[in-house]
Image 1 (cartoon, rainbow, N blue to C red):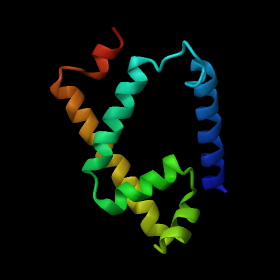
Image 2: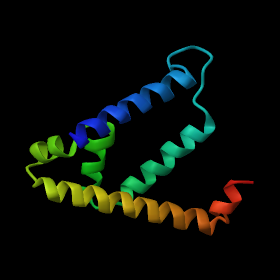
Image 3: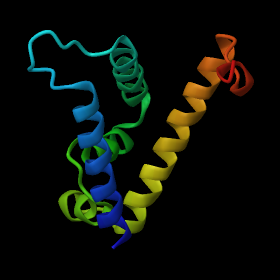
Image 4: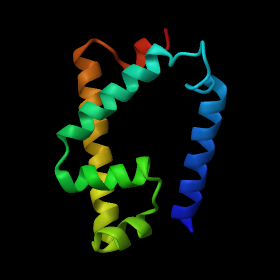
Length: 112
């Protein structure tokens, strides 16, 4: 149930974000530079992950599958899918936080 709720929430957020910025197919609308940069950064971080973790995150966020659906598709136990997803997200978060800190960005500097 929680996985279904999370997937539904993700779809709602994506639809709202898409509507807010306009369709990329609409002439005269371009993707904001921040969105393009975010996509590049996430893509780079995904490439650094071990293949199993990368595949699980891809299935979760790009194919919008729940953990249960990922377990069924991959043949991995549900607990293993959840562990891989959690470790992958923690690794990306740590890597991006370290990268921002190395560039001089901190939580305090974003409020300015």
